Amino acid sequence: MRTRVKICGITRRQDAEFAIEMGVDALGLVFYEPSPRAVTVAQAAELTRDLPPFVSIIGLFVDASPALINEVLDNVPVSMLQFHGDESPNDCSSYGLPYLKAIRMQENVSLITQAVTYQHAAGLLLDSYQVGVPGGTGKTFDWSRISPIDKPVILAGGLTPDNVRNAINDVNPYAVDVSGGVETAKGIKSHAKISAFMQEVANG
Ligand SMILES: O=C(O)c1ccccc1N[C@@H]1O[C@H](COP(=O)(O)O)[C@@H](O)[C@H]1O
Image (cartoon, rainbow, N blue to C red; front, side, top):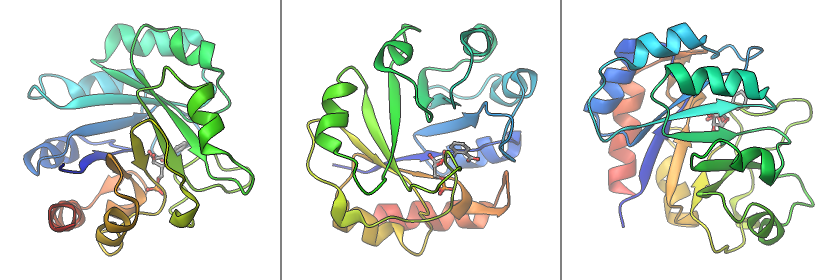
């Protein structure tokens, strides 16, 4: 099966359009103010307006208030939520939309337990663990620590055009998720890197 691709941390309309042209399956928007990739609700509405169909828009949140999430849902065509903090399964399920739960791969994490805990998640997004940083670390983790689970795995954390082919061969994930690895600066996507990343995924 083809490996799906999500590009996260989109902040500019031209990057969204280019990524779609390159065949990306999903675009992630970060609604977490401390992130250099954060977008406001108004920016998100503008950069997703009249995008072509069949591309998922994913809203990324880190322990966000229900008020913020509902404001996003009222104004932005988000079709899936990504929870990157300590949200409970109940929190994640309470918006009536499919969701991904990010699991930061701390030493003692049990993916089997997480898959049971977040049994209603559409998939688990596996990301690197770094103290005090909820995500977007640009770092890989030891992929051999990924145990088989009964859920789609979205592999994230430090993926780049240089390592994504190995990642796909080693992990065989349902999808890969990249942010920093296709940027020239935080929040500014490189079209050359997006193109190279997509080429490598196709060859993976
Ligand atoms: O990108 C961010 O700034 C961010 C902030 C808070 C939580 C998650 C964040 N990004 C997500 O982290 C992973 C891995 O990113 P990277 O490829 O290592 O840069 C990815 O899902 C991003 O969407």
